[in-house]
Length: 168
Image (cartoon, rainbow, N blue to C red; front, side):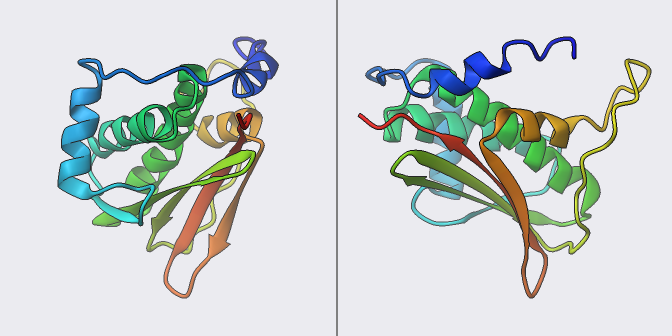
C-alpha cells in the first residue's frame, strides 16, 4: 500500500533510547491545554467535542509522551497521529458535546483511550483506492498500533490503542 512502507520502521523506533526533553515553541500550546483541561496521564480529562479538539488532544499527547514520560520524538509522532484519528472519529461521528482523553504508561507499553457517549462501534473501512478521501483513520490505527480496540461502557464506549515502548 503506497505510503505505508515505513510502518515497521515506525514500530521499532519506540525502542530507541529516550532523548532528554527540552521545551520548544510547539510545546506552548500543549502547556496551555494542560492548564485548561488537566493532565491526561494523571486522570481522564474532558475536552469539548469541536473540530479544534484534535489539535488540543495532539498537543497534550505530544507533551505527555516527550516531556512527562521522556520517550523519543518518533514515538510521540506516532502517538499524535493515532490520537488525532480517534479524536477525529469521536468529534465527527458521535454528536457528543465532550469526549474523554486518558493516557497510561505501563512497562513496555503506552495506552491512549478516547471515551465518548455513543455506543456505535467503529469499524475499519475496506480499501477503496485513491478515489475515496476519508474513512482510513482506523486502518491507520490498526497498522501503526501494537493493539487497539473498543470497550463498551454502561454509557458510551472507550476506543483505545497501545504502542510498544522500549523501557530504559
